[in-house]
Length: 96
Image (cartoon, rainbow, N blue to C red; front, top):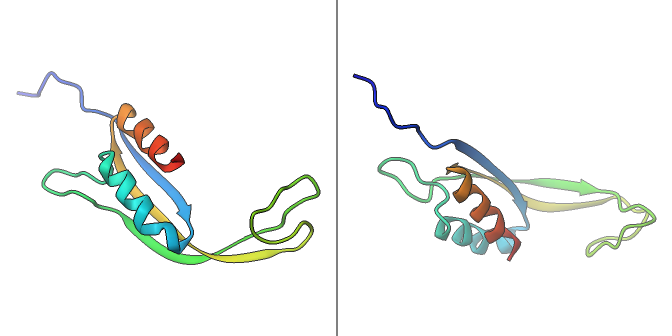
């Protein structure tokens, strides 16, 4: 017999962060319930790569200069979020 309850929606949260801030960001999202799967906690995928951006005339870059292509090392983090409320909580945790 099939259950009558509805399963919470699952979302994938993907964000990019400088390597020096990786541990703090992961701690924040895990504290807010990210990366939970039955029997597991703190699940995520992390890969290191090179990001690039080109600040335009109206930009206010923290790194690099207007008009100059900039390349920086950054980490891409992917994790699962169960439920819309949890997902919103995770996004807020990353903003802090």
